[in-house]
Amino acid sequence: MRTLEHVGICAKNTVALKDWYMKLFNLKVVYDNKKENPTFFLLMEDESMIEIYHAEEDGMVATNKHQGVRHLAFGTDQIEEEYKNLQQHNVEIIEDLKVNPNGVKTVFFRDIEGNILHFIQRPERLY
Image (tube, rainbow, N blue to C red; front, side):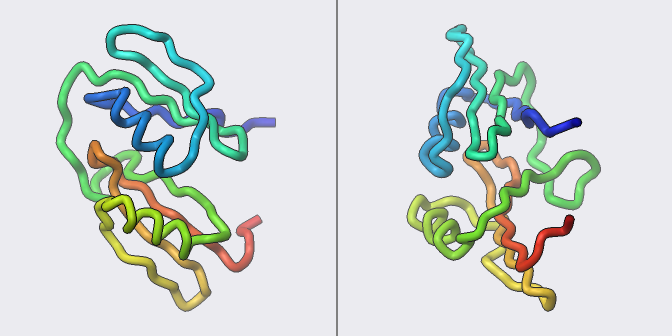
């Protein structure tokens, strides 16, 4: 059996980005290497993790249509509350909450380092 154990986010400021994810998503730090530019693993409710590690070079901020991995999607069954939480924390919204013809609800936004994220709520699972 294979699972997606973690997604790595290379950050200019690992502490600030860790704090942002913890505040917005209520994640738990399960690893901190305690170095000058620390690496963190943050645990999600489904036991997957986000790794935040130090960037050695600056990169350009890409749009959702540039080649490569462009966004992380977080499934939720309470997208309206998630959307309000983003607004209350002055998160940069890229695409407001919308519903497609199949009833799939999405909202796209950026974290404090410009990474593209989104919430998705599906009326039925894909599998």
